[in-house]
Image 1 (tube, rainbow, N blue to C red):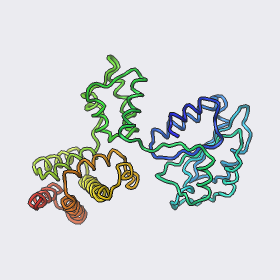
Image 2: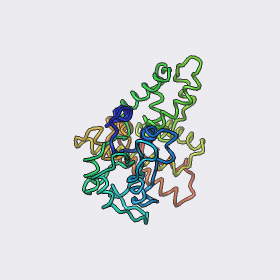
Image 3: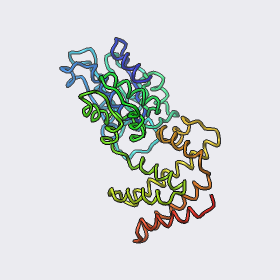
Image 4: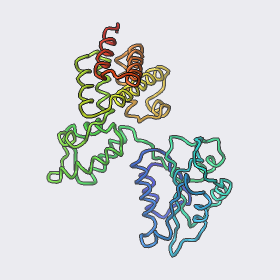
Length: 341
């Protein structure tokens, strides 16, 4: 279920004993956690709320808490964080977990305990009996990154609830500057609403002035300049990035990452994968895939490959020589531009 449905369930009298929260959207994960904590009255929280990190604490400790009766209250809330044993990942943790006992508890949970698993992972290992059982008996809550459309709707609803509104183009600018990352957008709202406290209208100028453009966003403009063989603009953008204090290796690494994504999207889209499937398979935000698809329409796979290999060469030279980064980038642009389109 989505967070809106969870909110309605927790506000009613239909709270369930087991919940599995999956996904990597930080803002949603924090909101869901606060909603669960709100179930327990504040004066009972100290005795009836427990959080356990599975990287540091044996699951048996959490189960002991989960099997205890609430202390002067209706429910006990037990939160299990970082349950890496639900994934196929190898952990460096040396904590010994009694997963058989956990499975037995899941199959026969305590009716007065609310046990919540927060699994901030892209996917779980569905081959494991523990995962299969948990998904079957628990309420599954989705905290995956939102699509651009859903993030837009979420922010608009929050702004309307707060009594504010966006001026023309302001929300589009916010999405562009944050990459449609809900956590970044919601963090920016605090500053934007405070700035617009008089007329309650958040303008494009306010977004531009208060929300910093990320390196990824700047690099996206640079990528288009490179592929468009616009030497003057590309060199200028690269110089501007260096002038802000960004490290040449970091700039180049982001460029390489962006061209790698463009190539991956180009190849996989040619095989018929949808935008949603691409985001899931490549484990990137849906908005980045959307932008990549838009760029890929205008450029050939050959050009993407040439640019990618040229940037890999710059990385090698940056690590092995003392050559000036701007000179290396200028030479790369001249070589790439002179290649047949």
